[in-house]
Image (cartoon, rainbow over all chains, first blue to last red; front, top):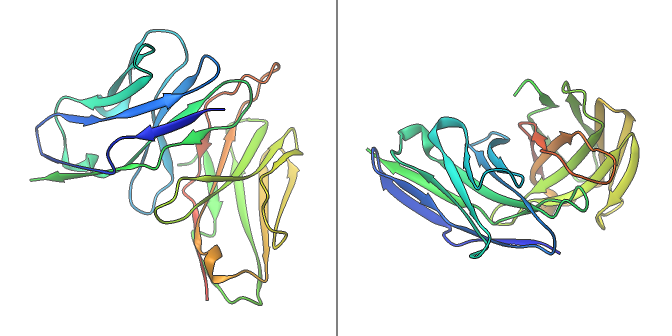
Length: 113
Length: 116
């Protein structure tokens, strides 16, 4: 069985400062890991995914995440926040044994001008 | 959002109504999913269709009835819903490969359902 814990329910940053969203996972198998973003009244958009290639994964809109097996973490970062980054972010794990995804509870990001 | 489309985007219905949600994927995928997203709760997987066959029914009440006529279309038929069924209903699709290796799921914009 797999599960995901997003360590922060809400993160507030100033525009132009770094963003860090923390995610820890548990999985019985070699996992696939994803970050999705959801803007208000929108569906989920894939930011990036890890599938056992490079441990540092680059995604869209300047986001990247690093897979650390020893720490069972997959934290999402962006060096400089933009107002358009205000949204809810979901860390997701799949153990690749089947199609099932396990979603974290989400982290709401607000960006201050 | 043109990869997976959902209609309607918003729906208000009474508890005695019958309505349907529609999902269409334009990505050539062979698996489709219904999820329920309620406030302050993680996404809940409801149904999975793989090559048009239902492979998952995650203990969903019978007042929700899915239909998958082909690999591009997925419906969720609703009848005698309860107010607690109010939520955002998301459709997703993916390309499932032999051996069960799961690929990325792509989501539609969702249908915001309000049950009065």
